[in-house]
Structure formats: C-alpha cells, structure tokens
Amino acid sequence: MTTVAETPPAPRGRRPMSERRRDLQRLEISREAVRLFRAQGLAATSGEQIAEGVGLSVRTLWRYFRSKESCVEPLLSQSSAAFVAMLRRWPRDRSLEEHLIADARPSSPTSPGDDEAALAVIAMSRTEPAFRAIWLVVHERSEPVLAEVIADRLGREPGELAVRVQAATLAAALRITTEDYAVALADGVAITGEDMVARLSEAVRAATHGVIGEALT
Amino acid sequence: MTTVAETPPAPRGRRPMSERRRDLQRLEISREAVRLFRAQGLAATSGEQIAEGVGLSVRTLWRYFRSKESCVEPLLSQSSAAFVAMLRRWPRDRSLEEHLIADARPSSPTSPGDDEAALAVIAMSRTEPAFRAIWLVVHERSEPVLAEVIADRLGREPGELAVRVQAATLAAALRITTEDYAVALADGVAITGEDMVARLSEAVRAATHGVIGEALT
DNA sequence: GCTATTATGGCACTCAATGACAGAAAGGCG
DNA sequence: CGCCTTTCTGTCATTGAGTGCCATAATAGC
Image 1 (cartoon, each protein chain N blue to C red):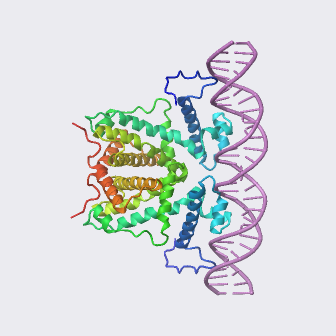
Image 2: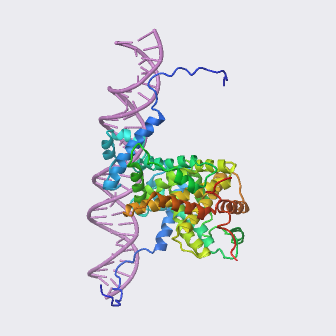
Image 3: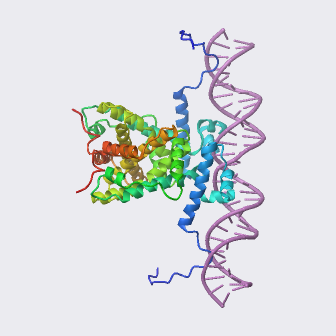
C-alpha cells in the first residue's frame, strides 16, 4: 500500500458514462414507461414497448432497470429530491410553513409534466402493489438526508435515534399529504399550492407538536 | 332490489377454504421460504424448492403467492400484527413505556422461531431490495390500525390528517427500532427486551415530544 | 349413489430478465 | 491517420417466474 502521491494512471479508452448522463437516460426511460403505464396499465405494458418508445434495444433497457416496474423510480425520486432540496434551503430563522410559502417552486423547469406523472404513479399505487412498494422505498431513501437537515438545525448528529425518528416523521408527513394530493388529483379535485402548504404544515405540527417546524431564534 | 329477508340459498358443494386455514397455509409456506432464503439467498432459491419443501406443487404455490419474494410477507405481517395487538391492549391510564414493560410478550407461542426469522428477513432487506419493499409495505399497512388506537386514545377520528400522521410516526419509530434490533442481531450483538423497550420509548418520545406515549388522566 | 363447488396438480406457454459474444462508439497515443 | 483500450449497445440463446387451461381429487348437500 504505497502512500506516494501517484499521478492517476492516465485513463485510456472510452470514458464511462457520467452519472449525470446516465441519470438523464434513466429519466427519459422513466417518462416513456410512465406514459405507457398510465395509458395501458402495468400488466399490459411490455418491456419491449418501453424500449421501443425510447429507441433502445430491450437488452439495454434491462441494463438501466432491473425490472419494468422500477422504471417509475426516477420520476418518483425526482419529485422527492425536489422537496428535499427545498428543505435544504430552509433558513434557521424561519418556520417550516414560512419557508414553504417563501420558497415557491416553479415546478422543475426541465419537464413540466414530470410532477403530474409522478402523482399519477402515486395514485396508481393504490391498486398496483409494485408501484406502492417502489414509492415507499423512494420515500424511505430520503430519510437520511432529512436527518442531516434536522441534525443541522438542532445541532445534533444525524445518526442519533431521535434525529432519525424525527426525519422519518417528517418523511411520513410529506408522504401522506402527497398521497392525499395525488388521490385528489386523480379524482379530478383541484388543490391549490396554498392548500398543500397548509396541510403539510398541519401534518408536521400535529405529529411533532413543534419538535420540527418551528423557527429557531 | 328486493329487500325481502331471503334465506341464504343453501350453499352446495365443497366450502371455500376458511380465511384462517388459508392464512395458516401461507404462514407455513412463508416459514419454509424464509428458511431457504436464509440458507441460500433469494436468487439461489427457486419456487420449485419452496413448493417441494412444503409438499405442494409449484402451480399451487403461485396460487398462494404472486411472487417468490412475497413469500416472506406472512412472517413479517405476523410480527407486525403482534405489536399492533399489544398496542390495542394499551390502557388509557398508562404511558407507552409502562405498557410495554407490563405487557411482556412471551413470543408467539405457535412457533418460537418466527420472530427470529422475521428479523433475519429484515436484516437481509439491507441488501435485498425486494425484501425491503415488502417490509415497508407490511409496515405501512399497520398504520390505519395504529390510527384507530390513537384516535380512540385522543377521542378523535381515525381519518383525520393529524391522527394519520401520528400513526405513521409511531409506525416509523417502531420500524426504525426494529431494524436496529435486526441488524444488531445479525451482527451477533445481543439486545435485551429492556433495551428494546427503552429505545422504542425514546424514539416515540423524541419524535413526538409527548403527543403520543403519555398516560392519560 | 348423483351433483355442485372448490382445491390441487400437470402441462404448455408467455415473457421478464440474464449471460455470452460481437460490433460500434468514444477516447489516448504514436 | 491507424492502433489500441475501454465502455456501450445490440443480437442471440437460455433460464425461470408466473399464468391459462383442463383434468382430477376432495368436500358437501341431495
């Protein structure tokens, strides 16, 4: 194990696809897959259709996703990540509700239909167990990041049991309000952004009685 | 739509298998499946092996479970249900911690290895995405029941947003402590029942600051 | 016994998913 | 420019999970 500072041995050949590029490709596949799932349902959609829709071979599709159901994951992750990113910008001197109102999100500029597509998948997850499973897993993956945010706010460690549980609580509040929103949307009931903020604030407040969500002095 | 009280038309032929019997059969399959999964891993275990181990044909196995991964569900559900049942016995005048200590569970008398098997699956879920997904789904399914318990304790409705979020919080606290326990067990670290009670109480207290868990006067 | 209903098994089949191998597409270097 | 190296993608063959279909066994009323 030489500790000499070695010059990286000059990489040869084709560079591995960048994380960014790979994620974009996965997202593109996800969009097409969800489009088909919404139109025909999960069972009636074949991997071949998805691959064809994106212009890839079936074999390559299975290199990007381990199963056809998991094709919905990037879209769900994106919406989850957007929320987590917003929480990362949460200033210490603001309450959660104030921040939610202030940090109005103009829907990810990349593709305006993504949010709607993700919500449609969440609505479908009521009857598609595979979608429900993926949605829960995606949501759970955000907990460590939320734990960082909370730990930073409270001056504690992200690994502490209390912090992890509070992160899970925050995630659960977000999950439930999102599901309500998705169901309402699927049923044709319109919900405004203000409603969402209000409900989410109420959820967090109800669950934690101010442990999370308050402004810090 | 006649509202006349009609005598049920005297059922003929073989009666459908009772729910109870069917669940027992599923549990039996689950035990064998988990035994094989623990010994060989998920990928190396075939549906044929599971069926053979229980003495069923493969065709019948797929009538009880829609996939081989979902064979772990009954064992996980059982341990989850045991906890929910304990919470149902939670007297109003006791704190959660007091009740946990008082209501010591002698491990379900049916099959003593079930708890250990379930914990093993949970530990495996760190590396097996399919197990993780099922574990999360099983846990989420307990939330409505927890909502009933909480609603009853607080004199509110189970459908209220606040109650549902508190139920999800309680479920998350239980999930996290259970996972910690499972991981410790898999690593050979012994944890006593008292430790579990203490950690779970701490988790609930930390997350809710007394919204849940306190004794009611 | 006969008949109706359900549970199970056997068989063929579909298709999601993987492994193996062969080109094609990037790079660096002489 | 060729030449080499590495990665990406496609084609083909194969496995195995899961289903439809039909026959048979089991259970229950008549």
